[in-house]
Image (cartoon, rainbow, N blue to C red; front, side, top):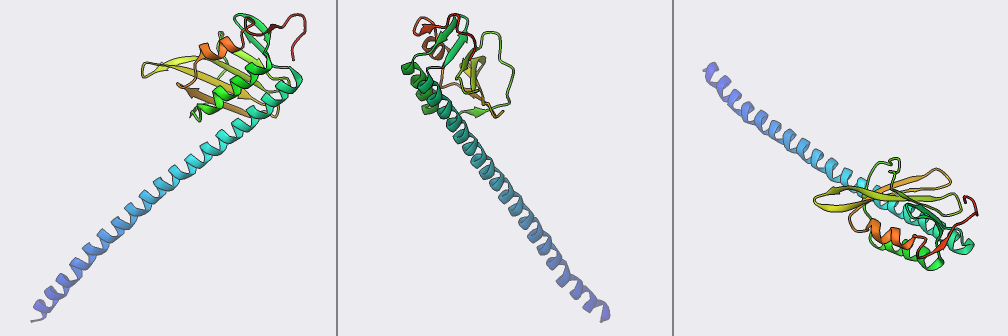
Length: 179
């Protein structure tokens, strides 16, 4: 008889152990899923805050350049003092089409155009390698305080920006030195 009671006791304990293992597995999977979702939310918020900081720094530089008539463009066509209407066109063109894909800062390529705003902020832009068969623009904004923002976008085009800062649409920058 004692053997019968032992078997009954073993059978009662065995399903309880299985259920607790399933419960632990379900809790672990739930915690993992919540951690992934939390990480995605934190990353999204971080990217949004960085985008807002980029727009704020670009806005301050744009305002300074407009007020002081100090936006200098250096590109393949030469140097130009960018006119006020083009200064704000560039700002609107860039900010309305963002936010974009955040990337690591790189050294500007040889054909990059450099915009010097006069307050220590510079914006470099150049064509990056195509992605999915579409043209890609690389933007690198550097502030006087040392902040860097690097983005890739397929919504803004090198040709549109470079035409707006060309000496053909602006005043040539002759004999006036660097900002």
